[in-house]
Amino acid sequence: MGTTKQALIEQITEVFRLHGFAGATLAQLSAATGLKRASLYHHFPGGKADMANEALIAALTEMNDLALTRLAGPQGASLRLDGFIEGFPLRPGSAGAGASSSRWR
Figure 1 (cartoon, rainbow, N blue to C red):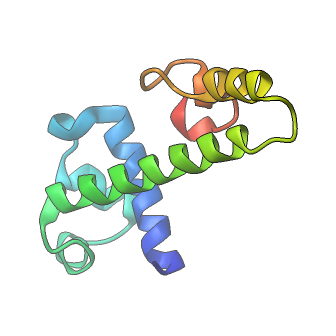
Figure 2: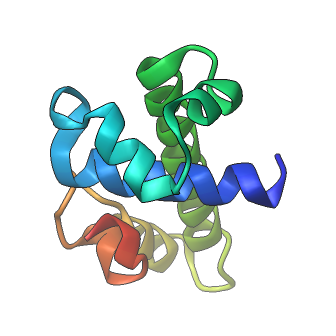
């Protein structure tokens, strides 16, 4: 995935985080990305659902990477598991991963 698309997904993710899927409008998504609606559809042919899908994939990938990093440490299994649990978000806006990733606060 190119950096342009990554940047778009990050901007779109923020709109969904603030407004939810149902509350996010194409006007908000367009304003956040700086793209006209036609350009958004060029990058995301499936429209808002495609944008949400890409945002979800990016979020799950980030959480997976965080989990694997915390579980791969040199300390004992118990400490690695504690680190994983402390860093994993239980729900959006929870302490969890938000402590290390401001995007999910």
